[in-house]
Every structure is written in C-alpha cells, then in structure tokens.
Image (cartoon, rainbow, N blue to C red; front, side, top):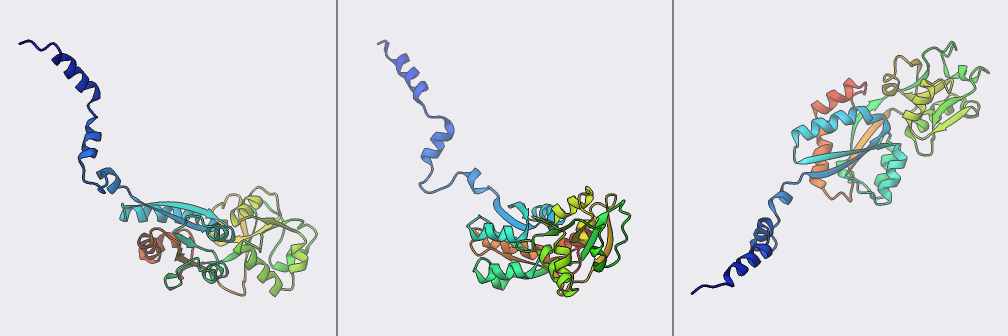
Length: 269
C-alpha cells in the first residue's frame, strides 16, 4: 500500500539530523575531550628584562624547536615594572631580571620558586654617546663639564641599569652633579634611543645594548660598578605550567642558549 507520508518523514529527518561532528560528540563518553583539544600546545609566558629582548627572542625560537608542545610568549620591560605585573597577578610563568635586587624582592614576596632560581648571564655598564659626538668623555668626572647638558639614566626606582648607574656615580662622588642633568627613562632601550637620536649628550646603557647601534652610538668608556651586573631567572610560583617553566629555565642555562647569549655580547654567569 502506498505510504504518502514516507517522503515527508525522510525530509524531516534530513532537516533535523545533527551534523556529523555533533553526533560524534554526543556519542563520546562523558568527560572525554575532543582530539583537537588534547593536542593544543602549552602556553608559557616569560617576562624578561628589556636588555634581553634580542637574545631571548632567539632563545624562545630555539626552545620551541626543541619543545614543540610549548608555545612561548615573551614580555619585555624594565625589571621593576615586570615585578609589579607579577605581584598584581599577571599570568607569568618565568621571570628573568637584569639584577639580583629585583629578583630578591620577588623572592621576599613569595612570587618565585627560590629553589629553582639561577644566575644565567652577566653584562657590563658603559657610557654611550652619539656616534658623531665631538665631546671628549674619558671618565665619569668629564660629565661635569658644561657641554654635557643631558644624560639619559634609567629610573633607579624601577630600572636596574639606573641602580647600577647611581651606585657607580655615588662611588665616584658624582651622583649629585650628574643626576642634576639626568633624563630618567623607563628602561635601558629608551636610554639607548635617546642617545642614538642625539637627544642627550650621553647615556648609561649596557654594553650589549650599545652594540645594537654601532652606526649611531659609540661607547665612550666602560663604567666600573661596585657590584657585578648579574641576571637571575626563576619560575613564577603561581605558574599554571610549572614543569614547562622549569624546562625553560633549564634551557636558558644549557649550552645552546648560553651560546646565543654570548653571541649577543652577554657574559658567562
């Protein structure tokens, strides 16, 4: 017997049948994740001092090549500003500072894993001048001359290079005279840009930063510092990926990353 309602039923089924992916999801056991979710890479955020920008961009690429399950996001800035971000709950997994003082603060506040803290490289402080400068600056005392009107210095309250600079000038008895000419900057790269553009007669920067612009910046002399310029690194205590964070710290200390750092002018720890 003909069934005139059968074509209508088939049409209804086609219109209301769930898509294949939805059907498979409905059939999957409760609590199981789809395959695509199980293969997503780990997200790892590394906050590092501004002076590490070029070296850590290369290190991050090398680390990902050896650890394809991890995707590294790099956040650069003044060490003090990065510390404030972590202290306020920013989702950071690894912290690399340009000085021990900032890392000591992080440790005192319980923001890092002390047992996994390591010193991984060193740097030097230099006085940089514009490449075409005709000033004769051979010592810190020469900064007192009238021709030197502006000197770029990282803000000592939050920028490690500024603290190293202040300590060096205080040791030479020149902090009051030179700080009166100071243009305070937010990080060492800003100081470098000021002197490269000729907006200041001189700038205190790291040797590694001065090397970035040889055609625009010239090193007048190396500045002796009371304490060595040491860079520590540590996993952040609140990291959601502690194992991956430790892997990154270990990688920074390993020969491939150390070779990258030395190629960028950094010194062995």
